[in-house]
Each structure stands twice: as structure tokens, then as C-alpha cells.
Length: 363
Image 1: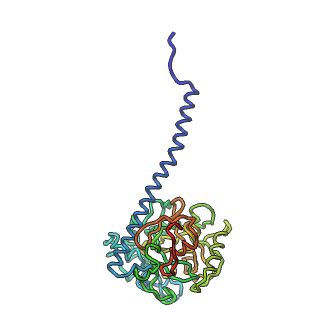
Image 2: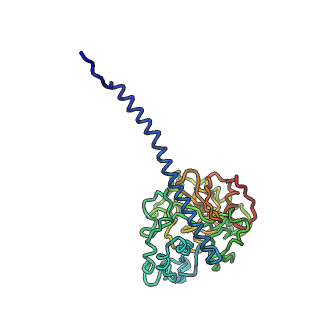
Image 3: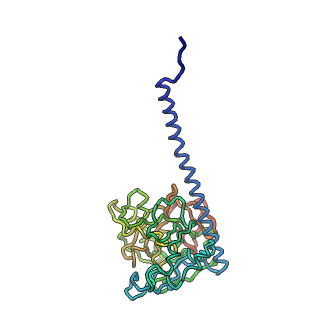
């Protein structure tokens, strides 16, 4: 009698187990490879922004401003804070650099007289530009499935507004247009490379930030990535332009120790609209060097407008990249800054003219 050849049940189970182990080992490697590709694309996007900023500099002798208020501020006052019929919405660095990003058609379609709440009806004049998404302004690792203020087009990349306001405000490379107490109170106009005395290779110009959440849901300072999309009240008074880091350090300590039950003030502001900006309310298109990368965004108790971000606050860059964020320096190079970067080093990277000496191996 001839014997029949085949697998026993135990052999089949062993083979299945081996295949399962191999798949379990392979999937993380595939995911890591995909994230590496996404991170590489993010680096490329930031390099394009750096190149565009320098092309803008060549044409205009200055780097783009974070906002252009009072241009485009002729709104009805429905969104103005002062109740005086003045709308402080203007447009920002990303729109001004659009021609340098090969977006001439969008730039030419934008009417710079009107920014947002225009007399002819909200969103009507510039709606085509407001709603058109630019792919190079999105990080491929962004996991939000809906725009924060749909149908407004959004952005993941933000300009460096400066270091801690308690030391000195407007010390970054993408700063406000001077306009009394609504804008750059320090009176610093647009800057060129001559104003970056710390060296353009040692000063951040752009970084990245996760966009806000559609519908403005309440988020809490837990371990989920959504916590990085919210802005939280820290309850610490910060006095600006006094040359002291003490209150900014206190703000960071309070922000770090927030109870997990703390409600965010807003979670839909980051990346509100890729064209828009507001003086002193820089959550839409700028960040600062107070909290280190991927820490929570927190407002100080005496901020003029704590919901939108102000000179007293901590609005760090955030990302879904493991362990840090990409930062485009003033010379156009892109560096990966780890979450564990020393706070003093991070502050030094955020200021253009405070004379800090930064070692290349410190970040």
C-alpha cells in the first residue's frame, strides 16, 4: 500500500505561525519606509519654501511679512475685536510668496483690497483663492481628514515669529507689519539678511504644524495627537519686552502640568486659511520658539486675545513625524529638530539678533 504525502495539522499550524511572525515583522518596516518617504517630501516642501523666500528677498530686498495689516482690512467689523468697525484680517507670507511657489494664477486672482469679511459679503471676492488647496503647503504626514475651516484651504507650514515675548517680541524672521498696538509694537519693519546678525544658518524661518480640527471640538492635554491641535489656557501672566525669561518659563511649566481634564479654548484655528493673517494673532500662519517641538500650545492669562495666539503665548511647531519636526533655516537648509532639544537652544534658534552662540551638536 502506497503512503500519501502531505502536511500534518501541526506542520500547517507551524507554517501559518511563521508567516504571521514574518508579516508582523514586515508591517512596521513598511510603515517606517512610508513615513520616511513622507518625511522626505515634507523636507522638500520646506526647501521649496526656503527657496521661495530667498527669491522673494531678491525681488523685494526683504523677507515676506507674517501679515500685511492694514492691507485688506476693510471689513464690516463683524470679526473685529475692537467694536470700531475695523476688521484686522489681512493676508500673510504664503500669499505674498505664491508667485515664487509657481502659483501666479492664484496670486493674480486675489484682490488684496479685500481679505475676509468684505462689504460685498463674506468670502465672495476671494473665494476661489480661499478654497483652492496648494499641495506643497501640506505635509504628507498630516493625518487630519478634513480642513479645519472647510471649505477654506489650509496649510501645515508656519513662519517663525520669534522667541519668548517676555524677553523681546518679533525676534523671528517672519514678523508682523508695524501697526500700533495691533501689529508690531516694537516698530521693526520687514527685515533682510542684514538684520539676522545671529546668522541665517542659525535662525529658523519656517517649520510645520498640524492643522486644527473641523467643527472646533474640545480636546484635552492627553497623549493623543489631537492634543497638539488645541490651544489651552495656562493661567500664567506673561509680561512682554522686559528682557526676562522667567514668566515664559513659568508658562511652560504650567502648560506641561495641565490636568488632563483641561478644555482647549479652540481646536480649529491652526491652518485656518492658507492666505489669511492677523497682527498679533498668529495661530493661523506662524509659530514661536517658546515651547519645544510637539509640546502643547498654551496661552497666558493676560494675552490680549488668548484664543488666536499672542506675544505672551507658547505656540510651538508640531508634526506626526516620530521624535521631532522639520525646520527650514534662514539659509534655506532644512534640519530635523528633536522634541528633546534643550529649551535654551530652541529659544536661540528662534531669535535672529540676540547674539546666542549655538553649537551644531546641540540640536
